[in-house]
Amino acid sequence: MHQTNFLVREPLLDPQQRVVGYELAWQHDASATPALADLEDLVGFVAAHVNDAERGWLLRNKTLFLQAVPGMLSTDALHDLPPEHTVLSIRTAELANPDTLAAVRALRAGNVGILLRNCDLARAGNRLPMIASFVEVRFTGADVAAQARAYAALKQSSVRMVGRPVATWEDFDACAALGIDAFVGKLHLTPRPGADVKGMNPAQTTILQLMQMVQANADVPKIESVLKRDAALSYKLLRYINSAGFGAGREIQSLKQAIALLGYQPLYRWLTLLLATASTSGYSPVLLETAVVRGRLAELLGLGTLGRADAENLFVAGMFSLLDRLLGIPMKEVLATVPLSAEIVDALLERGGRFGPYLALAEACELNSSLVSSLAASLQLTPEDVNKAHLSALAWTQNVTG
Picture 1: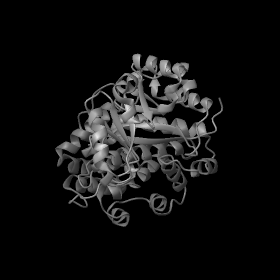
Picture 2 (picture 1 turned 30 degrees about the vertical axis):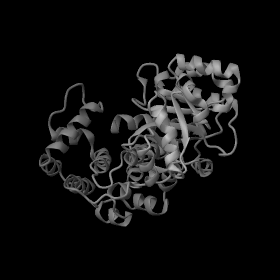
Picture 3 (picture 1 turned 90 degrees about the vertical axis):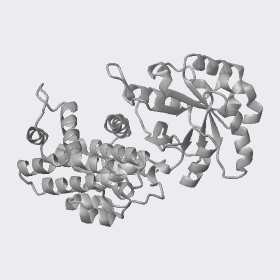
Picture 4 (picture 1 turned 60 degrees about the horizontal axis):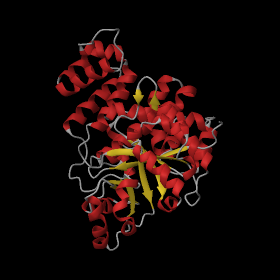
């Protein structure tokens, strides 16, 4: 089937701000009900790209949440997704139809997750755990005491609660206090407030020094001597180079070998990733995961047209576009301390130059944005190109941040 629509993802957070799953949908008009064919197409496409015949489930411990309508509850494509990592969300009113209820019970018996939307918790009562594994609760911030009473009974059952919409960290804290298990909102783009530390920690200062040396094409022994001063960094580099399949069938044990084998531009790209993961100020696991997905998606989007070297620059641009939030300092300050090419700076500040449109497209994929279509068209990328890159970036990120 020729794809005409684009994927949008929304992370689900647990009370520790970790990403426990993703809600995947086609870009859509929020008020419209998706067509059966579109939903079946989504399940089939996702299954084909994140559940590999040889490598298995590429999203590791993440669960996917997919919207469902009664007609698709028996679609063959569902058999291609691991049931323990799949949750179908359906409107509670649909269960009034006996056939739909029977199909939902059959899916639950097969260990597929079911999330009920628009559920009247008081009316559902004791039957809920037999039908659903999740229930969506609408968080309004009003009458929290009444909500707490309604949720208390659920907390004693196996049903987990997903709060929506949770738009601020204050709401997040209120929901966590109510015992809600997961949260959907725009929090993946918002740093957690209240962090006392701002700016660089010692590990990041060392990484920064290495980035400057790499950018200046310093000699390998000089880079090696700085790396040797930080045992944790040295260990991470050797672990990375041996796990990433660079070695010629043997383990790389010397830093000099590792640097030479990796090359300067890939080393810079790796240091960028490290700079973000070494953050301790305002640290938010969801923000970091978003930055890595964005960087990898921008890289994959540009790979065909720009080639490998420039695509690695796109990864750096994608990561840096959230580094100000990860480090808790303004973007101008980040750019003053980190050596970046003029093209990357242009992409970061203006979304301009050759790299800017790819970065803008990767960002737009995080939101239900009409910009995705026009940006992709301007870069001569088809919806299928973008969607494949999106799922590939999501899978790649699990191995880097997991």
